[in-house]
Length: 172
Image (tube, rainbow, N blue to C red; front, side, top):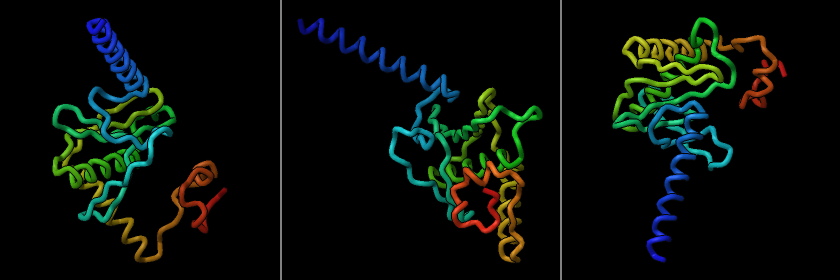
């Protein structure tokens, strides 16, 4: 009887493990262990990551631990642009890579942008890090000079923006 219980426990464990891997694959996540999940409606919200160097905070959709690497994953609900990830998406991913590096002390080699139809593994290069730093400095300069304005003409983006309540330029 004890042997039967042990076998059932092992089988149940394998089924749960298999279901978890299937769900991870269906979500478009790379192999590895999900250690941070801000996209799930079923889990409590994670705390934002913070970078003292950039004075930046953010919450990637997922962090996946693969070998010794922590990989930030940004999930987009839309299909991928035909010509590849948008610059803003690349900079968002670069910000998450910088946050992971400062939080864990280890620089991620890559980050992932997962669109509804495709996934892009993006190398976190010094050039991408420089582009991030330049963009942050430009935004801070615009803020200091009072030049920061809405960057689009899409009411749908405003309707789903977390800052719409405080924005005097909102379209929706």
